[in-house]
Length: 334
Figure 1 (cartoon, rainbow, N blue to C red):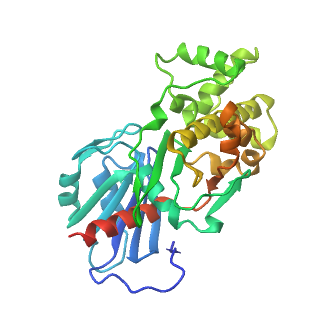
Figure 2: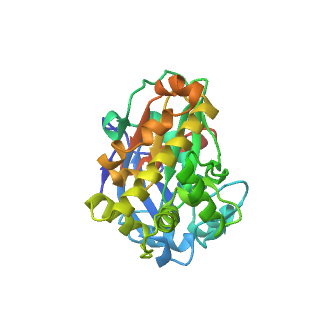
């Protein structure tokens, strides 16, 4: 498929298209950027179908009809990036950035955390790329917060730096989970029977939905049918299962608490953005959940948070905007 993100035509890159990638624990998304903001040949490959990231990149590039391979590439990956060696947390791929650059035949390869890239995309999102949940209005030039649940729980922020922005390389999804009511205390107690340390990610992720289901089934004295996350969500949205609906509602409420914590921690008066694979699929169920009321439920800081807007990112490939900006900055300094 072809996706054009630029509002007006722009000149093609003189040194050929740039390869952009967004690598998650489940899927690897690739695109070619032929000109600033113009994406072509967007494809999604299953990580499980390829033994290495290099193999997935070659498979994607081999399927393109363009003359000559890209010389420059940028990758967003669901993992900390602190040096040359990258080992994924939620998948078995690991690699040397320099070896990968050489193996795929690139002149430039930039690898960043996926939520760092997603954070860099936030100033470029159009009105139609996001849905506001609740009230509040963004303060111009203020910090932005970002979190999103999918295979894991990603967290980042964007801090203004002169005429540009600095994205935070956060692993905030691994902070210790804090219950906000008696039911969540019981959920935490159940989670402790499975994990020594219960992070926010343990509950606010795909496997987290499954953990919430097991915990609430036990708390409510109901049978545990061993449902997977997609089926829990499907039944909740279809109205077929009251327990599944409670799981989704609890998930949304917990996410509201974490989002409020992030807003206060960063002073994110520019707003909090929700990405990841789970929330956008919930649609109006998320909008009418207790997410926003829990976001504002912070005692003396309730009034402060009521002024902070929250958005769900609805753009299909927002991380590409971020890695494009990061790669452009890198090449401008060469």
